[in-house]
Image 1: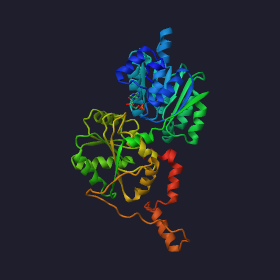
Image 2: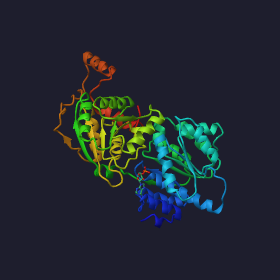
Image 3: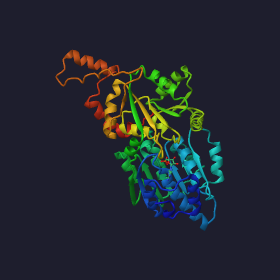
Image 4: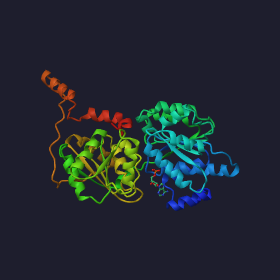
Length: 431
Ligand code: AMP
């Protein structure tokens, strides 16, 4: 199937050609026909599947055809709500690219920056608004935005919105939408709260489920380095010194950890920058821009901040920490090997993370090859699981102390179950 077969308006086909897109991705070939029929859509898919074009193209198509029939003022007819600034900017860029020849206007609004410029652009009139929830509500409440003309409403990365505590904002936004509209709802996972939320938004809908994980994992060359927690900085420096020419994305589980990694690299004269929720918008954009342009070779990111990163030439991803949610691993390594290119994903695994590694291998149905020859090998044995027997007073006290110090080493069934239970909303927490 080609985009031409989908019956899209000529200016959009022309823009897609410029982009070098010939064939729709699976989510596009399934979702676009549904959306062209003006049905609501539930998309279970994540970034990297071509989801933005899957919703962007039909919206542009409808708006373009309507504009041909009745010229009028630019009013907000399509609204896309997405959790992070990075994603918002990326979606805005996609609308600009695909809608280049349509005469339709889009703009992006997000928090963390002054509102003046955004308000001015809105005053000039836009057809498509891409927004993060907080700033959107803020500008609605100040009277700068009205949603009364919205005909197409997209809720993007709904599970991440939930994760970031946006659920109440989202409900408020939905309440302000006209009831006659086409609704699109995207989420990578479908925990109960998200299913309930989708029911609130969607009318008569069709569902498209895309699972890119396995396919992505197969394309990426993966390796794991067994290393102690204390040697991780040295191993990172050792590996990066070898790869100075490549763009490398390093994942850190926490914001604090990301800052520490940047510091350690600076001590070894390796320039790196961190992006995470505590960084200012300007700092994040600057770092991301430099990374995309190839001026900055090493970017350290937390999972949430990294969701919006779309860098085509990314050949190496390093998991400085292994995520406790296996799906997050797949998502991380999918940052390399985009489109059809292959990439390399290196993971550091300390003794406490071995259980995470086993969970990951179970999910991707393959063993990740271990690199046994490196200067910081730590193949020490995992601590034994505690015996299931009536505890003596002294062992009870020992465990209590261990838990209190936050240093519990055992990751037995209980801790794994806890991870599983939290899986849907702890995977990308930007702590
Ligand atoms: P997304 O899931 O929307 O973040 O898209 C992931 C990447 O795939 C982006 O770099 C897009 O530019 C690219 N992409 C989307 N659709 C296509 C397509 N049909 N052909 C080639 N690349 C695409």
